[in-house]
Image 1 (tube, rainbow, N blue to C red):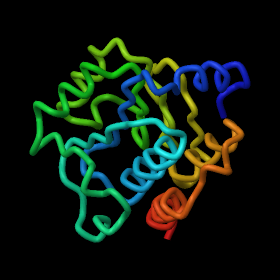
Image 2: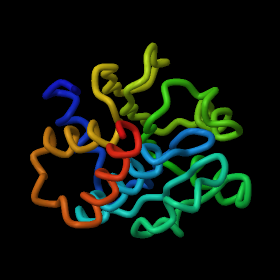
Image 3: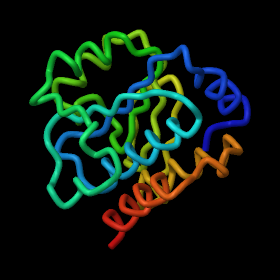
Length: 174
């Protein structure tokens, strides 16, 4: 988990004047989409806007999740995805440990001046500004919930946040 100092610093980054982007990996699965939408809805409940980006499309069986239609798929909307990263102040990197796992978004991510926050359960993460990496946790969606707890804002977990995070946990663990 992030240290108390890091949590305090991240809290200070999460303000309405920031452009927040959430990115997940190529060929997004239930944990990638669930953790991204879960974080998106949590931020929305905090009064913060964010944009979710994925390199390519995700399976139809995940499109039922609340606001799944708002996920920007870079294969279809390359310019919009590039502009979102270019204008970002804060980028959450969910369910991947390396820029190589996010296709074209990886090049843009590494060139971005935004603060990069990694939440992931895969081995050997690359360098990010803030890293919450734990290979013993079965799903990034569970880690997003732990992050919300560390912020002390579980009261902002509503049905949308919960159903998205649950989907991510269920699909990564069976």
